[in-house]
Image 1: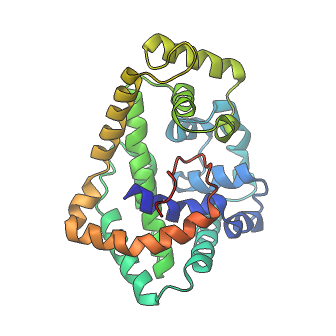
Image 2: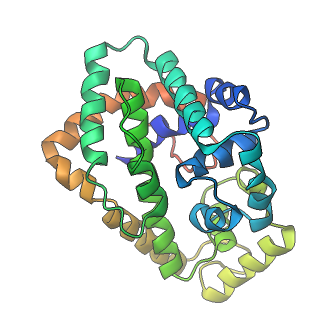
Image 3: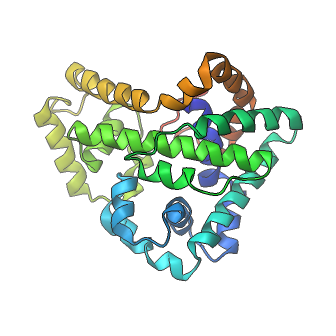
Length: 274
């Protein structure tokens, strides 16, 4: 289900409509919009909670944006901008789909999002607590975002439990299947990347030449399994029939959304199936 939900959420990062909406409230520059929009459900926070919750960004990079972005736009303005941009992006991507299709998808995904367990999940909880959106595309995007951040919180917990720090996590992903250029913009230095790769070698996850080992792959699969388990409640609540129906409804929406997401994307979406 993540592969169907994530593209709906991710228009806020990649669609020109979303970028324009942030710029309209004074958040010029990609990272200002990113940090303000994603952190806005937490209120006018400083850098430290966002470093913890976002996990894979260097502290100094977050500190360049927060709390100074709140002098450009309040969290309330950032929230309105991110929802406006996302809805415009979805409207542009889904205009050929019947209104009844979008409304049914919004109702089902909202039902799933209402079932998230927010205990210990800061970003999921903050998004779940936002006032309900009124129109189908807004409800669709907001519910997808709640589910996405809820899953992400569980993934961070699994990474921490496995003893992986942020730059080790990025270095592992690069070693497995992601171009380094996708993740080098997270603010870590080359020395930090080098040291992280060295720690993965010491752990037995990488060989000396940087190739993932069977031990490393098995251990990281355990993290992925724990992430799936922690994210299961919304889909259990929706039930097999409801989940299958939502997948069917999301398939054309996600396919259209993926046309604006670069194939080599930093969020790790696998290539779409034909």
